[in-house]
Image (cartoon, rainbow, N blue to C red):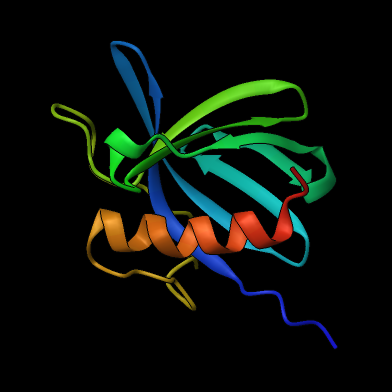
Length: 117
């Protein structure tokens, strides 16, 4: 029986002085990050490594490697960043918890249980 949870939430990829608004999805053993420019990655969870949650981010941000590329994400909208973006049709089943910390905690539980350390 498959007990994996599906999560879909707005997220910002933090890249120093610029940020990319996007949509992070965990579903059926895959992690996907999409922006208005298209799919940035769609990886099997076996390709996800080094998931790190720093205490000083209060579960609002985390780092990971997807297929060897480093990413840093935030569930809280950075100052001056574009509004959250989500793909057409994504509203169905969106897992929106309202607060970045609460959303981050839900993601942390799922990533910690599904991604091998």
